[in-house]
Image 1 (spheres, helix red, strand yellow):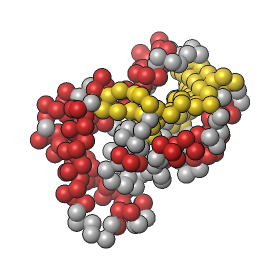
Image 2 (cartoon, helix red, strand yellow):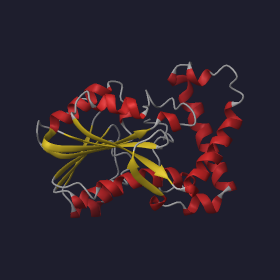
Image 3 (tube, one colour):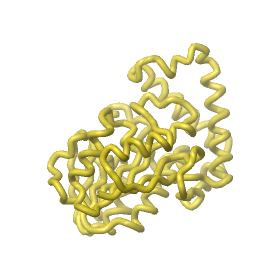
Image 4 (cartoon, one colour):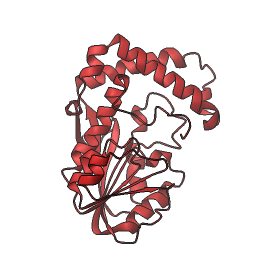
Length: 258
């Protein structure tokens, strides 16, 4: 994801990505109601979550594989540390040193998801919490070759139990406007994947599919934006909600306590 700015890293600067951006933003809006103290964000990405999280933290630590843009204003007004590294492990983070870990749309990219959660458990203080989101595979329209795996609600609970005894399993849901877009997107993708009569998306190596997937994904989002401009432009984070998990949630929203 270094040279190619993949569609996996959504931006609020591209109008065609507004629906997915707002879906990610609702998780940050929910997290700011909870976090305090020393906050570690794993997967700071494009950095739009920093403006949400850093002002609520005594010390905000961002970790990402690639450089994350952090404005001078945010740096000046908040206690921010950025660590560029691959995870796991969580290098430079001491045991029992973090009050809250925030990691949104990351675990699906991690080869060893159990080690990833074990490392989060290691750095959390006793009573500390991790807030985590990841796609619900039951609502994924197609396979993303950028994802090593996705989880059903049951599988999400099982992987959390590998490190945490105490957790809440919730989900991110969309209202009618969001689901209208979802269904239009599903139909648009179907028109593309109908040519995949051998189901190659499910058995070809991920690296072969990454660039074609990314090109088609961006092309599809742009077409949806062109054909449904008002719908795409007006979706806001308030069109999403978080409640008890079920098979119809778009993303898992998990809170686990050490």
